[in-house]
Length: 64
Image (cartoon, rainbow, N blue to C red):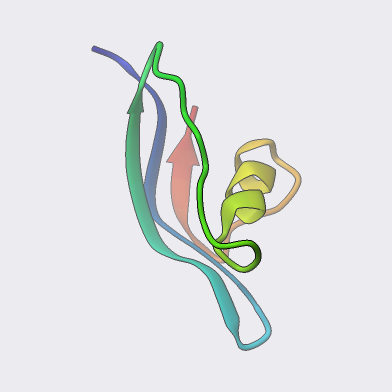
C-alpha cells in the first residue's frame, strides 16, 4: 500500500522545549489517523502545522 504521509527524523523546538524530536512515521493511504497525547506539549498541533506548511521543521523532512 502507498504511504500518504512519511516523516523522517522530524524535529521542532521552541526555545528549550522539544515539541517533536526525531519523529518517524509511515501512514498508509486510506488510514484514518487520530492524534492523541497529553493535553499540552505532546506535539500534535506542531505536526499538523508542519504538514500544512504553516511551520518549518528545524531538521528532518516529511512528504505527503
